[in-house]
Amino acid sequence: MALFAKHGCGDKKGPTIAFSGPPGGGKTTYAKRLAEELGLEYYSAGSIFREYARERGVSLEELNRLAEKDPSIDYEIDSHTYRLGCKGNVVLEGHLVAWVVSSVADVKIYITAPLEIRVERIARREARSRSEVFRETVAREYLHRHRFLKLYGIDIANLQIFNLILDTGYLSPDEAYTIVRNFVCSTLSRKGFKPRGCSEEKQR
Image (cartoon, rainbow, N blue to C red; front, side, top):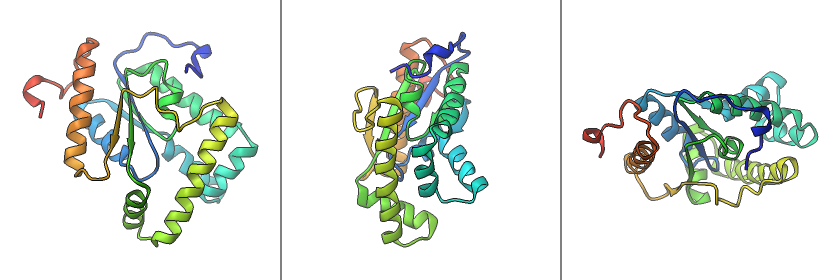
């Protein structure tokens, strides 16, 4: 779905790789690692959203609720993300990113895991209680789905746009990353891209 294609997109200077998925799946970890290894820029829509929340002195959940009433919050972040995708040589990561840049992304990857595992990961990473993280995570996912369906007509439960869907729940970080990296490298190779770090001898 070419949400922002009407804005136009010049010639890209390299590949655009998009990671999406629910909180705690591991998309940030793998997107950052892939960008570093392949010599691509990394951009996180989530970090911008969190910065918005900090600037406004509200929680992520509260900002999600504000965005329900003010579509300009999402649209500003998503428009910027699309422009970055148009540039190429970039790895983009965020809950809705793959749908936003669908028309210009060369590889679209969905990273997920069972809810209980994702909650445990977030709670451990942020030193918070599992009950608090569970409540916040379920609320965020509900608000995301409802808001994006209303704003863009996108059902984020429909994963048909993705080239790779990976459940990381029972994989080690290295196992999951190897799958992601090898898939991306083989896909980019078929499309004529030769990013640093994707040579055959480096394939695992």
